[in-house]
Amino acid sequence: MAAMTQRQPIQYTGVNISGGEWGYIKAKVDPVYGEHYVYPTEAEVDYFAGCGMNIFRIPFSWEIVQPEPLTDLVVVEIERIKAVVDYILAKGAVAVLDPHNFGNYFKETIGGPAVPTAWFADLWTRLATEFAYDARIWYGLINEPFKQSAAEWLPIANAAVAAIRATGATNLIAVPGTNWDGAHSWLASGNDNLLGIVDPLSNWIVEAHQYVDDDSSGTHPEIVSVTIGSERLIQFTEWCREHGKQALLGEFGIPVVDGYAETIHDMIGYMEANRDVWVAFTWWAAGAIWDNYMFACDPLEGGDESPLMTALRPHLQLAC
Image (cartoon, rainbow, N blue to C red; front, side, top):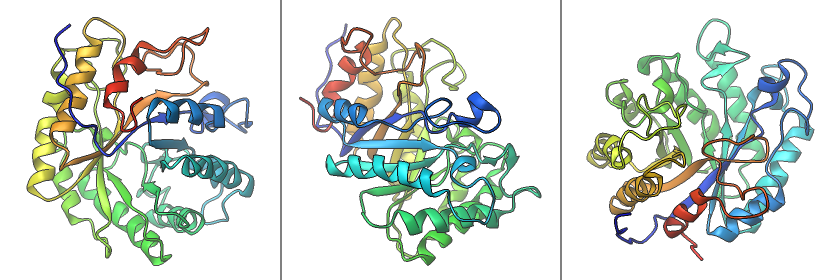
């Protein structure tokens, strides 16, 4: 293994604790909490905070927190999410809200005839009203929109930003690009359009995702090369710097195959070397709902540390 160049970790280093977004994936209809979907547990937060993580992205389903558009959020679901958020805050960490919906609502495209943009803005009016009480709660607008063109996505994102600010919430907003939010395809996807985001507080960052398999989908247990992670971040990073934007790498994952540790060190090391742009990353993923997932960084059965966590440790803000 090549020697790793040690740099200071970027400001926020953490993980997605998956589970809240699984309801309709597992149940199709009428998902049951604890059976078809779960939120992060205190024990999970304790473990990852103890490893040095200080930011947690919390995926959940729009359909579960608001099963009817333009209506009150489901109280029990918001209470469950707030309990997780408050526990994360008590650890001194940041909680990122993540409606993990891929730009859809009940499989219909946001901004299309079946799901007006106003419905999405309403969701964020209600979420912002509930979660404006601490600046360490960040608002990730939505996970990986992909059906909307960049020109279609910009007014949708702006409607959500406007709705959030109309509540008086001042929290940081993470705005994704379209076409699965890939850093590698940022400009080719037309995401230069996000320069048109209007935030009266200018308190927003760009969220991108990046994987290291052949098509950047994160669905294959392979690594193109040990430097592919940094290579795929270069154009996006330069675009952010040119336009004075900062970024969250909301998802990235690397499987345990030959060269995995070097690939992790290369990719995160690139962010550390470009810390004027990169303020945060959240590894994809952790969570007990997964079964032998190739990117899972949870403790192994029997309690041993995952080799992924071992490789991540030197890059964690509170590394111990």
